[in-house]
Image (tube, rainbow, N blue to C red):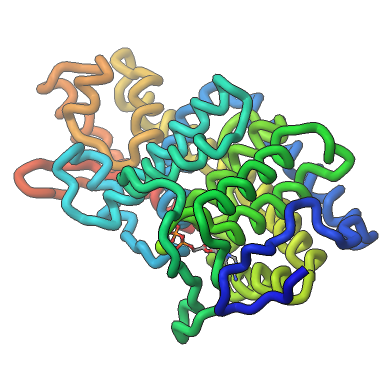
Length: 363
Ligand SMILES: Nc1ncnc2c1ncn2[C@@H]1O[C@H](COP(=O)(O)OP(=O)(O)O)[C@@H](O)[C@H]1O
Ligand SMILES: [Mg+2]
């Protein structure tokens, strides 16, 4: 094997599984804990009466955070405004975040149909999140730089055939049962590194690789719904994320990376469960308050709508068949008076924000 040189295309990147002892007792213990917490999250989601209501906001939050890792930064406010604007979105970062969400939903739908995570699926995700017809890299010159001082840290493999061969090997590792004695969470860590090290696209590799994680959890039936994401954890441990990817390439240091990912799954499962709990509690409180004011005209669908669209406007109530324009407007005004919505004016239109929900989501 040729020695790694950060300035030369790493065409000798080894295929998975790595030649390293992955199941040390530290990793083993961490894996048990993470699996337990993840199973709890999965089970909890199965008991929810209307889990789709939560997905909208959870997936959007992940889209925001996964983009933020790549310095595509948007505020909560810009982003939610954008969700209401359709094609009129001008803010480039918000646009990319919305594309990311679409790309993720598309990927999940494809996976549900085929059960397979293929190169084409990954290409399709990258094309959607970047809104491009770009494909696997053909040209040379792609390098990864340290985001703080811009020095080159890694040069990924070059040549379309080489890249496609490595992706094909990765595809086998993901989908075939040959390596099934490895714990799926450990495999997820290996897969993420491998995908990032192949770095098949000129851009969008980080974001596609993070969508790949959740697709893999769904494929392995560790999750029924796409609710667990590592982006928040990665942002909080950003320098470790970069350092550990690098130290696999340079020092074959897999154990620390696997621990990083597995502990991330544990921590994030716990955080997500708490967040969903907090949202449901808030929703119950809103229901009680709104019911006592609306009496016979109360509808559960209206509250569901406020919790799947934290920024709302009259036409959304109309579209959902909850009320005609005049009545819908009165409803929102009433809820505002109860203290459960805050109005804001964007252009000529008035929007209402479920600010208490936004507080929980952005925590
Ligand atoms: N040393 C490294 N080795 C392999 N992959 C890395 C390394 N450092 C960073 N990465 C990955 O590269 C990603 C950035 O690649 P890029 O194509 O710009 O993604 P995006 O367009 O989604 O921003 C990071 O999010 C990370 O996953
Ligand atoms: Mg990028």
